[in-house]
Length: 248
Image 1 (cartoon, one colour):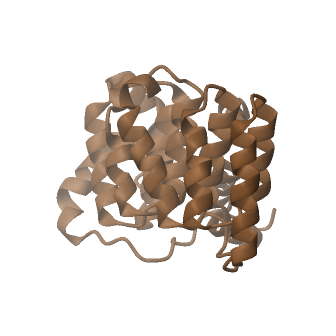
Image 2 (cartoon, rainbow, N blue to C red):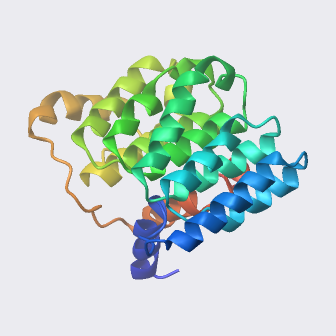
């Protein structure tokens, strides 16, 4: 992959889908009717199919029904609803994701497939409101895929608060987990600041202690080396259940 293409891919894939045309009243009505019917069905496949078909309709009524899937008894329906709300451009979709994480905080600790996918979906919105969700309760589930979702998710929110949150996350994690994710921290901080202090977390902490007041996060992601650009793009484009298998 050539570098310009990798950079373009990285920028395109980190956030929700591009802005969609406003749906017509007829499209909204049809989507609501189809989703309502699917959620009355006992078949999970019906709910999954309806969510996939109508997820592109960014209307409050449609998103509210899709959000019912977050509490579905079938895990595949829950994952489909999470993906749909993560790809939405609507702030209402993020509201549903954040409320679900808050209300199901205890149960999510044990849901090894759901929690990392939920964190990725929340981070896709690139909204600073997501920062507390990405840092809260980090010790509760120490799976590699979950911690990576937190670290790289923070990097998708272009705010100095994200940089601060990354250093706070380093402090919360244990020695083993912190150093196991040294490369994730490096990439996240590089994406946010354009600075590279390598895989030494001590070097990063020294830099932060010295430069904290002067650090700024530019609105656009800085130019990355090809390997970093491809890794960043690859992470955001990957099938969520196979992230660790790909070594990202």
